[in-house]
Length: 215
Image 1 (tube, rainbow, N blue to C red):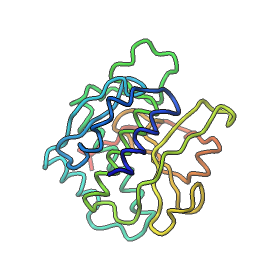
Image 2: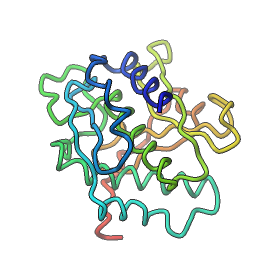
Image 3: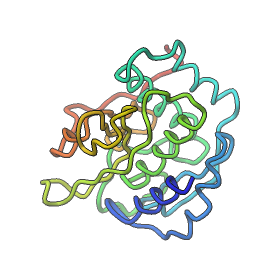
Image 4: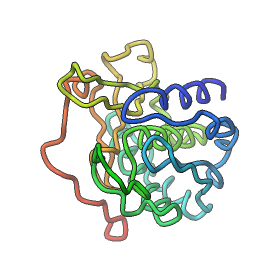
């Protein structure tokens, strides 16, 4: 729990924006259950709301991993879908269901919108809950990753994961970003090698919202 708390606080100090740490002091304690946890929005966690998932909603997330993935690659594909599903459940509850792809740097109306700090914070929380409940089995939660102005990119942060057994390979084999900032709320998160993302990397096309009702 101490590891997730230190990570959550550190991620708000770099990247798209900044926020007051006081808002996040109790966040780690809220990550004991899918039923109640905090979600950031408004750029740099300007808005911090307590919300959660019902048992029925959480079961639908768990169903994405049935049958169990047979490889880390397959599990990453399921994780991408799971982040999309969670966002679709959480969006209407927090007013972030119309969150647009990426984040306009100068935005005078950030209510319900999320920059990369918000996205990385929330995605890390979702990954932590999935890992805590034993739903994610082949990956561990990684520290955030950041790319800077000198990477020919605006400062940008993201959540990351490591394949089990490759946790020490920071930026190397088995280290992947889980980046939900590139697309609108409810779309599949981009999961790509960390060294490729740091390039800097951008998707070629916008990804459509994933429609679970049609699956």
